[in-house]
Image 1 (cartoon, rainbow, N blue to C red):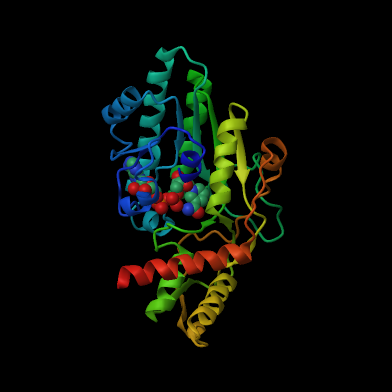
Image 2: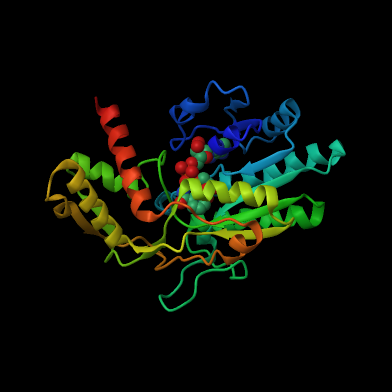
Length: 314
Ligand SMILES: NC(=O)c1ccc[n+]([C@@H]2O[C@H](COP(=O)([O-])OP(=O)(O)OC[C@H]3O[C@@H](n4cnc5c(N)ncnc54)[C@H](O)[C@@H]3O)[C@@H](O)[C@H]2O)c1
């Protein structure tokens, strides 16, 4: 959203503001003349049709989702509702609006995850656009279902689309249930830092602004009906990452004892061992490449959360 607004695009953000959304995250763009915000639930078909009609929406970048795997294990139903029913509603609203418009400049870009491909052993090469769908969690299954709905609306109704599947994001504005902000918050609070199982799971971390740039490039340059995998070739074991954040936090806070907060907890049910992305297609066909290296990205991210959490506390 920030990148599109800076590039002078007209942007309408539709978000129902669940626990994961916050108007405070929109503060920096609130006064922009090319931005407006609509608080609506993508599951409400009439509301989505109204948004398309009222704003003359000609392009969609669809990110709204339930996204936290642990919550999907506790209760998968909100994931089915938003990620499956909500995506179908949005596709239908786009189809109805665009089939009447006569314009050929429409596109529906669906933002999805590498988790739809299930997990990899350490020996296997990274996922590509040809990898089979093998989701493990209710979250990834609901995202896989949404990917299939998008391809079906494309094939059946000729809805113009692209799909992006990205690896784990880090950066500012994440809800602090996600691993990196959670670890930072626990360091500041002096509370235990939970690590699932033996902490040997591997994730492929990418900075959110590289992901966002990739999504916009896929939206603007991608070929109709194609998927693009976005990743940074930056695999990290969960335990190594948590230790590294403790190192950075020790440094920042002038301490040397934060590693003692690391606490191993019972492994997540159905926990995938490894995700890794081969982003060759996006690099070759979109001319996209990640720009933020992990060391500096992690450092600035940690500083951002420390300032935010201290601001909230004071
Ligand atoms: N975070 C990652 O590491 C990652 C990686 C790959 C792909 N993705 C995808 O990117 C998208 C955004 O992820 P995120 O981490 O920012 O998620 P998030 O859970 O932090 O935020 C989701 C946003 O969607 C909104 N929302 C939820 N249900 C809604 C509904 N029914 N109607 C309207 N708005 C609703 C929430 O209010 C919130 O603002 C998701 O589609 C996710 O699958 C995320």
